[in-house]
Length: 279
Length: 349
Image (cartoon, rainbow over all chains, first blue to last red; front, side, top):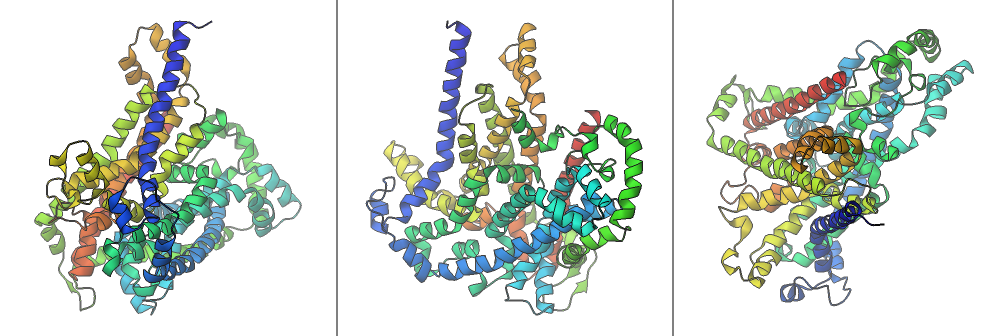
């Protein structure tokens, strides 16, 4: 039997769906717009900006990839992101294990020092980095982009993996130790398999942050070393007004992150929210 | 719901922890990084066992040289590429330096100049202006919306959550490119205005001296509202429905229920949304770079952009360093205050 309360609850549920759908639409429409635009010609865009494209025309993607040199930027992005993600995940797993499993003199001070790296903006390190890369002879090499980003990812990764190791069932470790397992063995054979979910989250988060990194690359890279975000932002010549080509380039930039995000949305949201101090 | 609670509120330390499932070394942790800590009662329970296992674990897993070895490789890279640069930035801020010539020590002159630099205050003012759009508007807006919605479980929430959060994971360059196009003089926003008969409102939004700040700010609000909504929608479902029933028994109206039940219940989520969006507003760079480059004039000029311009365009690295240090101090202070508030909350909880 329907009484007033249940009717009110039902209408409130429907009202909630309407509100959610409306604001979901606002969040997504700009992206839909850019996807539509990427398949249009410039003439088609100014004639009907809101309509879906007349045909699935990939010319803009070809033009962006070859003409606007997105192939080069894409390659740079991959060359930078892959080592940053792999190396910082390994280093962070090790230090997270060190901090999560042991207490030792100076552990809290070391953690606070690493916390600093989580809080300071890149602006606070960029000027000496620029100088340092010159001194090390790394200016205009991929190392100038890779090494600082490993160092910055290490700060977040350490806290992330430390939290993971602190929540491990210690009976297992205890048993392994009794059976004569070494520390390295405990980490590698027992804790590592249990840490896979945390590690996977760390990998996707670091991928997103490194893939999207703008400021550091803008300052430390030039020419062919530029990664996708900087390449896109600094498009020159006739491409600055060619919105369909820019739209195609934008899709090349955001599609890899979007695909990962759709598969691992929980990892993304949890990571971005709990790492509340990472920018 | 319990899995969601754990998933969504790692920072509230509500994750159920069994003392015997934890390592002894974690027991006395102060929870740096807002991560869970066991309650005091589990500490005392475990104390006896801890001592015994502590001994064994330490002996078997190695002398305390070992943890340092695990931390060392990463820490060295961190030292060279983050820590020393931070110290160098502070040092450079006391020098008159172009970035390549000889540096001259000038004490606090950079900071004194900064305090009298109208462009700097303008940048600070614009950052504050963006805080309104990044932080205050999305939070109030999302609070209002979530309180209008049902508190019951909604089917398909995962779908809405995924969609609403998308602007957060996107490159700000892409966001900037999209909105730059939407705001152009013959772009979709102006065409829409013409369509509904508001021709007088048509303008080059990002090039308009009055409206550029609002346009950039609006993009910021667009990026951040989904984050606040996702946080609050998860938080409100964790509030015990009985609290609302009790409030109703005492005759609380909708506004009072919001004030005395919803708002305290969402306290942690509001703090998280505040920190994330506030720091984003202080750090904003990518979006301004792509949308306006600080212009027109200096209407959207912000501190991070000023660091970039002074250092790498005007070759005033010492001065740029002073701006960077000031900016970092503000951000670190804000973060530290939030840490302090959160750890105080946890002690009282």
